[in-house]
Image (cartoon, rainbow, N blue to C red; front, side, top):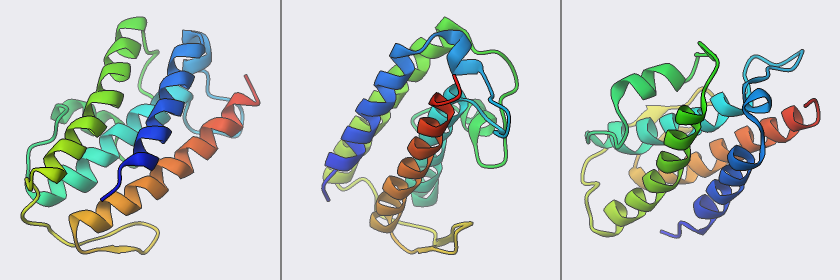
Length: 149
């Protein structure tokens, strides 16, 4: 399994997180339901659900983070610089740890899952591939949001 796309996407997301002001990260433009900060946090939360939880393993971020940014949620508050620092940390660490855990054979079981797009995930590899697609979708949304800031 090659994690090159995931690392590249996360590097782009890190740049968005670092190069925009807190006002820009928190702004929800007209016609959108979420902001840049939520989209980046949602990417981390979803990856943890798709890869770790479906494999029967503990996520690398706490349950509260996942519950706050999982599918169907929206920004609950204005996020702070402390929130940004935490998100920057987990954005990088979760993908590095996932790669390490994958190559060390940590993912032994998997609960099949049908995504809201109708894809059936039957293995951790399916989840890893779908996750790249999901992160690309949200990166596209963020690029659209950036046009309105």
